[in-house]
Structures are given as C-alpha cells and as structure tokens.
Length: 476
Image (cartoon, rainbow, N blue to C red; front, side, top):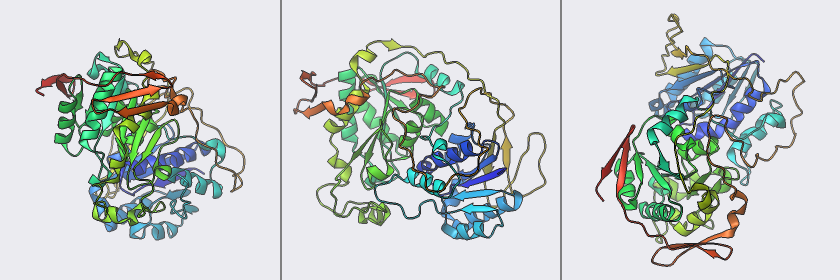
C-alpha cells in the first residue's frame, strides 16, 4: 500500500472532524504510504500540520452547492494521480460510482452505511474500516488536531495575562434550531465569572451582533474574539480550560485539541454525534416524539428550521443554565484558578516530515509546485517549503498481514491524551461530575458539591472587545 486517498466532501467543518479518527487510523496502519485527504475549505486547513497526513487537497466550499462540480473535481484528481486505496464518506453526485469505476485496486465507499442508533458516527467509520480489514484496534485513537508550536504561543501572547480559567462560549450554529438562547449564555457566563473568576471569550460567528450582545450583557472581563481563520480559533480553544458550544464544528475542534468540551444538542442525538468522555454532551428534550436518531434530517424541525411544538422555539430551551453550570463545575475547581497566569513557554517538538497543502478552487484544478508549475491544468497544489520535525509520534509500523475483519472496536481513551503542543491546567474534578448540582433561586444560581454550598452569582462590570491583539473597552 503506497498511496491512499480519503474523500470527505460532506461540506461541514464538523464532518472533517468526524472523519478524522478514521483518517488517522489509516495513517497509523500504513505509515509508509502517502495519505492524501480531499475535502472542502476551510475545514481542510485544520489538518494541514497532521504528521499522519501527507497531502490535503481543498475544494472551494461554494462547490458544495453544485454536486456536478464536486464530481468533476474528484474525476480530475483521479486522472492526475493513481491510488492503491480510496476511502470515501461521500456518495452524492455519482461520486461513489465514479470511484468504483476508477480501476483503483481497493475502494471503500459510504462509511455512513447501516448505522446502529446507539453508535457514534465516527465510531461507525472505524467499525467499517476494521470490518474491511484495513485497520486494527491498535490503530484507533480519538481524533487529535495538531497545531504548530508557534500557534498557541502566539494566541497566548494576544490574550496577555488574564484571570484563569479561560472559558470559551461559542453560541453560533449553522441553523437557529441548533442554537441555545443568548439569554442562557449570558446567565452562564455571569455565573462562571462570579463563581470562578473566569475570563469569558465569545468568538464571532455568523452573527457579530450576537457575540457583542452576550459580552456586553455579561460585563466584567468578558471578551469578544474577532473572526479569523479556523486555525486561529483552534489555537484559542487550545488555551481554554473549557469550551461550551452548540452542536457545531467548533465544538469538535475543541474536543480534538483535548480541551474539555460541553456540547448542547437539540435536533441531533447526543449519543450519536457527541464527544467521548470526559467531554460532556447535554441533550434537549430527549423524549421528543419527532426524534429520528438514525437520521435527524428527516425530522420536521430540520426541514422547516422551526420546532413543530408550541412550547418553545427549539428543544435546546429544555437545557437550563443550571444544568450547564453543574456539568461545568468539575472542570473549573476554584482552587485551581485563583491566580493570574502569563502565557507559558512551550517546548518545540522535534519533527521531520514533508507536508503538502493543496487547494482545488474550481473543477479545472491547478497545481503549484515548490519552484515550478506543473503543466497539468486541472489541479492546484501548494507545497509548504518548511519541514516539521518530530521524534516520537507513536506511529505503529505494520509488517503483518491485514487483520481479520471483525475484531472488536476499543472504547475511546479516557481521560483524553494531552497534546504535547499545548499546556493547560489539570482538572482533577473530572471524575466527580455527578456530585454537582446548581439551582436557580431567582437572585442567581447556587451550586452545591455534596454539602458545600456556593454563594449566589451576581456581577457587574464592563465588557471588552479583542480585535487581533488589542483589547478595547465598550460601554455596557
């Protein structure tokens, strides 16, 4: 096995991260093979520094709305390069038929097929690859994003010396039906400030006004984080003690960086799309009679964008701020964060790997090489001129025959492995999550751990914006 192509063209940032455990398992199973990933921008930029991936080819995301253009781009890549193995989670536009007719030695398509309702989607991908005899249990691990050493350092320099813990609130989601209310994020943010002296950061999503409203209402040291690249967002989340987000791609980014993550689910089912422990998945209205665990896109709320019941606008309203605070408490022990911390110094890992990032902007793809342009008019690739160096990536060499197809899938590792590129405080309370209870007593929230009560949360102050490396106060 010398060349492998993984096709992930479902269109969402979260889809890239759902596929990442399968992509990385193939990289571990065949460490000598050249592994190429074909996906959409901007999600592809998240995996350009992955030491298991040799090349990332990115299609313009606008092509996601034109299946024939996506198919043409896949066809152009197959004409340009030969692969020994192609694995794909994408079938629309006749892509699956195109792959089967490509004369590739081995093709595995439709990694979504026949999913049990109680199995996480990314685990399903791994089960299928294992049943196909392509990976072994030893190749499987939770998804892990790799930042370059300078990225978290630069982000910590932008943040400066701030009160810990740093908590990222990410209220944005692709559809209104998947969003928790602005008022709920404000109440949780104020409570975290009062209880833990937390610094709250709210990244700008599709609605800049929403981020500004949340920060202004929270007051205190809360910050709006200006919209940048996905890698900049990842670096911010890598420095956080906790990320609280709707069921959206950025929640998966945080989890893949081993940052404790709380994801709020509405139409989609938490046990199917949630993150493995110790991350927390909270489900709104789990007994909804409309719920289709196997395919939530068949629910009326997904088709219309509105909840069909009069009791609320979205079933995420069933998740209370008290529930979120109780789930957050084990990650944010006050004794762990009673001082301000300056950005830590991170050691540079030693790495030696040529990496390739590619971009397919139109079905007529162009390619740029290190110092010269290839004549092929159909593909554009950009080679990185720097080399990454690593001594120990824990990759497993495989010289044995392919495994038997029905080996059991191991459970995800818990606790999650710590990224060698990111330093953050440890959270000894992970295992004690069930011992916390938060109650809304009208004047604020009171949290209890066993018999120890906390004071009600009330806080006044002014909000601040962060634009690049500048912090500017705005009125309340």
